[in-house]
Length: 458
Image (cartoon, rainbow, N blue to C red; front, top):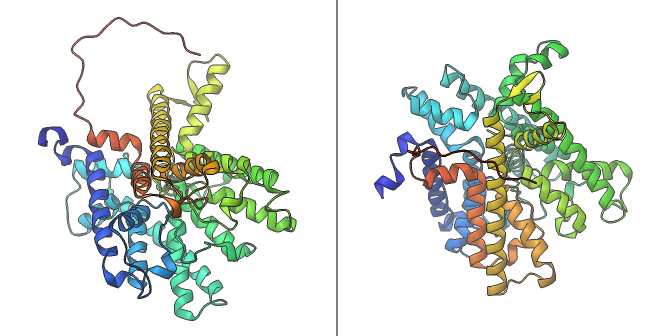
């Protein structure tokens, strides 16, 4: 077993796997304690505790229990701490604490940080970590202040403060957990709440490398600022804007004669914009997700699978992966061999990595969905059999993309189905490549090189 697993210190993927597993176990143990639930709530089962802890630590938002009504303040605080640890990254937190306590900036720490935050070219780990923590606290504190001031119109001071803090952290970490059973549907037309939550979602999902890069160059004039940005930052900014715009248009078109029919145009635009933003791994909703048209559900599934940015609180196979695949396809269509973007050539190894990531993500979703469908049909899920495929597909995509949106299928999951969703959330947060790297044997170079031959493609 030791030879198979290998020393954790030499394998960042295994360290990440181990830390999240430990956090999951610890969070579940705390949530099982009586002081974490309200007196009227039924005790959590072991599987429900694991499910809730996984959903919080993997910043997903799928829930089998009411966070606001069945968990006490201590239970809600436990969920919030798991969200914060999962959002900012357990490895980032532990590395930061280690360095603050005088730990060495070892090669192991540098490798972990480079993998988690995409900062392999930074000479000083502690400065990078301070900026990451500073960005996180700045956005979460700003969001908490705005939301608290708005919630003062609906709650007493302490309740408004807690709601503001909880929803701000949950939004920035792209978790989607809410203290309201109907998420944010009560604030469907509230521009302050919607714009604040959307800003936190986008900033939390765009990734720390982008934040750091923009903060270095924002003081320059716009043309110079844009030219100085990293290619990764440019891809993220363009890709994010395009996906938000396309998602908004799709919701407006498909739901204009359905859920949005009775709304005035400004509210239609706000609802569609919020749905587009939240579908890429946030998990809040201001309309009934289960009532969406099938065409809209398909668009949301695609957005959930793409997710947001690498080295962020978000999941999915990432915006940059989609951009690289699109650039590769465009280059091939026009007969090119090298992929170029913004006067830069993208290495073939990076393109290969993007293709591998997308294929592994698709394979994981296919396997997970097949298991979920077979187990739910076998054990008699409470979901309408005519909608089982749509509901299960949406649920699996939401779990793997760590989104948290649901058509209502979560409440009907069997125990076996919950286990499948738990595994999908865990894999989705770490990434399929990280999980495979964590459980695979050490790389071996082949002793023999064979002659090359090209099969037909397409």
